[in-house]
Image 1 (cartoon, rainbow over the protein chains, first blue to last red):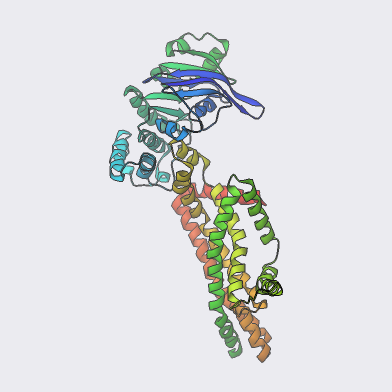
Image 2: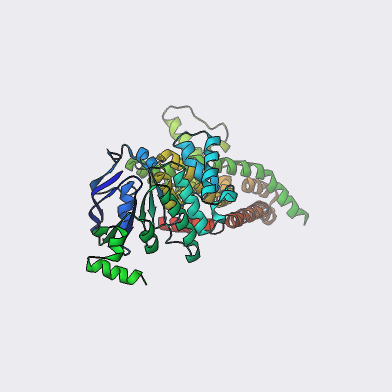
Length: 239
Length: 240
């Protein structure tokens, strides 16, 4: 279980995230939606301290995240990025096994066996020994998801995982994410894919100008938006 | 014609010295430069200042002055303070000076290379629970060195030409060989043209090789490395 309590993040004079709180229970999928610049990615990045919050606390399994336990906490909280961020000096399999081998001290053979299983899960076994640059965007993101899974995380944070993809590649990545959600993985997903949010999310947060404007189930958010701001937003994104 | 061949032949006698001074200098420069780059990018303010001052001083003074200080100034000041010191061979202070000089340039090359590594990949590494040491060892250094290889090759070419000033300190390298022959034969034109030809036949293929290396890496990396190199150029510019 992950709890974010009154998270504040400033960039200079700009308050990007203003006392935002959220709770994600085990096995739950939380989607964060909202216009660009609403602070949703920053809020997500505060969860694993890629952005160190200026106020508030993050608690995972009852343990408060601090500089001291950061590497341990990050093992439990993997992340998938908008721009994939695969290590370009390693093969696909190398990307997946690097952290299990070096952080978890897993024997290499075991890590590779597990890596191959994960590649099979995302449908890319045949790409194990190529460098990431020869992959398409959708394939890169599927490898990034396999890399995140290799750490056996309790929760995966997705930061706009499909925003940098060509439209025809969005589906293959969303399919993998849906499979994960069905398997009971705890996920926090910042996304512009309303169809995905509608179908998969247990809970949806709508953010604007650094605060939560509305929160609720998919039916509540899409079926019965209460605030004017959310109505405006949905009118624009749901064509 | 014969006199020109003789000029080339005389200059060639100095080539081994030129080459090994240059190679040792760049090798030493990489080691010291690495240290300087790490100091410059690290958190410690005093270390950063030391590194900055060193780099600026080395780059803003001619290597000839540095070489004269090291080869003659240093023994002089030691002797006048009662230390009996003499360089066993002038090649030693020559290599030291070239290495120290090269380090300042190499440090800047390495710094740009480190800064050209995609910050997103570094974040991803941290997000997977890696420590700073692991991130550097597994992600930053391997990529930075690859980005830097062509620039380090160019540094070697530059150093081969730069060592010509050592002739004026008394090291018998290519230029000094030509000078000595000129002094006894008065074949001034063939002597110095011969020296220039020797530099040309070494440096031209070497810089072509560096160009090929650069191109090969671009092809290997397609967009990734092209992008890295763009960032690298930007990082280098930002320094100037």
